[in-house]
Length: 303
Image 1 (cartoon, rainbow, N blue to C red):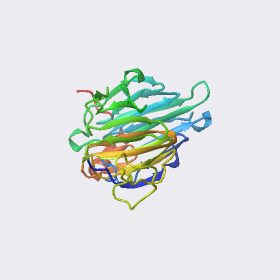
Image 2: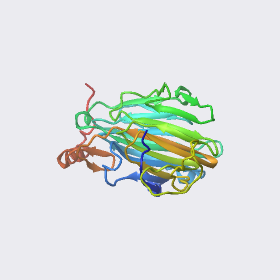
Image 3: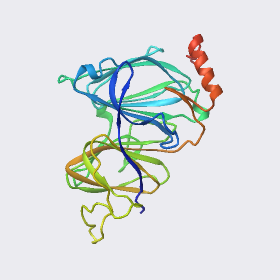
Image 4: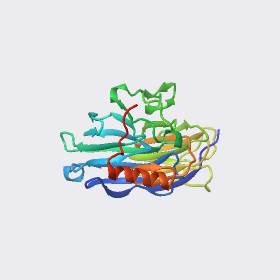
């Protein structure tokens, strides 16, 4: 077993997006190799409708997949192909934009005005950039949830974990997307695929993550065998933790427990030409996409 070293720990940054939605961005529009195959991760939440109700009006997507996970409130969506729907608390939508789509997402709060969700962008390899758009809408009740003997709960949204497989499939990045709750004071070892890019995003409570490469850190407890566990300081709400290679992470939950997303995917390792929600491999392809937006040929006919 090899514990993954921590490459970086950072707080998500306040950002205005869409028509004026207040959100926090953990990463995006930086070096695309950092989290390859993932490009962007946003945490949008609020308790005042003015923070989110302007939403994300019509905008284009090409060459990527967008993954929306709603925890509170509702996100109504529609597109240029006539698809419409609503994501409620616990629901997930995996949208493959492929060759191109015009899309809108309009959030609304629950009875208490609360709205909370996440959006992750995953890149598509060159041979799938112009694939036909498609959706996978998954209700929260269809997402398997596993409870371990120590009270740890894991929702398996994508991929396989502890013998359960998530309902979203056929994704180019072959990702794993887990929603994990660890009770107060519990230490947990979680297996990961050695060579996938992996990150955790803490959004409730706090935890310390073992770091295989750092000098002796904060000692929260001793291993059963008496060996000291090398741990970094607590990572709290809206904290991104990026890991290096290894086959497990070790998490020590704080006094209030911790809830976080654990996400990994196989790197694509291709050139990226990027302009907002349009992500191609070359500048020429990007310029073609922009020209098609202007002349009305961006949306391709179904085959």
